[in-house]
Amino acid sequence: MSAQTVLFDAPGPRAARRHAILTVFGFILAALTIGLVLWKFQAQGQLQASMWTSLFTADVWTAYLIPGLINTLKAAAISIVLAMAFGLVFGMGRLSHLRAIRWVCSVVVEFFRAVPVLLMMYFTYFYYSNNGVFTNEINPLAAVVTGLTLYNGSVIAELVRSGVYGLPKGQSEAGLSIGLTQGQTLRLIQLPQALTAMLPALVGQLVVILKDSALGTAVLYPELLQAAKDLGTGYSNTIPAYIFVAVIFILLNYALTVLAGRVERRLNRRGRGPRKIAPTAGGVIPEAEIAVDRTQVGMGGDSKA
Image (cartoon, rainbow, N blue to C red; front, side, top):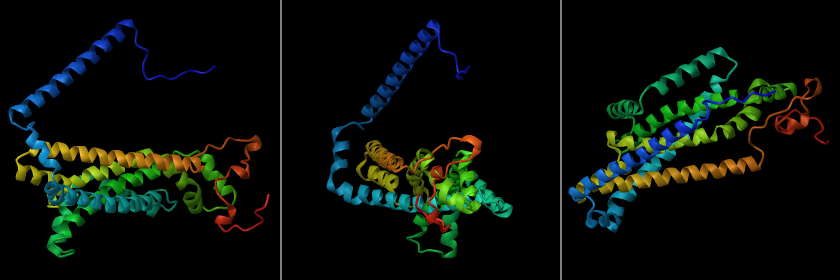
């Protein structure tokens, strides 16, 4: 006999009608809000055609949007690479069987997860500027990358740890049963499967990196949001400029999500996704089910069937 666990009971006729009424009321309220916003924009002249057509001129793109977009993508790309490296190193460190390494990595991860990104950007910017670590032109970019890397790398490290812990216990037992060390089992068996399993959450964090690059305007980094601010000041179309840049951010994040989805499907077709190993008679796991090739770990022996 099996029992089905549900979060709430199915609504009855009265509850269904109440939900339908609340849904219609929500749509009406949203429509009224949007209409009020558009009416306010129209009253201030922000919906005039001239306010929007200027956004598609060559001068606007070459002077504002393209440089800002390049700087945003540059900061995001560098931060993504460094955050991934930071997350893998400290995530594996939190899984180490050595207590000292686990303690140090845990302190670093929990500290940088707790500090706001903007505060880290401020601190590193003034530190780099006052100590001459980089040139004045590089200091804003370095501060943005440092803040994004430390915070998002810490979150990715926690994703790695939780992803490995979420795998079936038989995966680690399989690696240890064929003579792998704990470190080899983590690197060769558990980590590849955990990365595939946590790919949706990882993509969400990469989107956060791309969006948080807009905080660079606080440390004088000329990214896309700062370009929108300058564009609105120069052409007196602040609202259209911000809306247009918001659309660009949405398209960038959507493209990143689509790319990650294709990577995930490609990995699943190759059989790199997490697999559950079914127990067999006597508790012995068939060697064919172990997701590692003996020849890759230097165990030697005959690899023929």
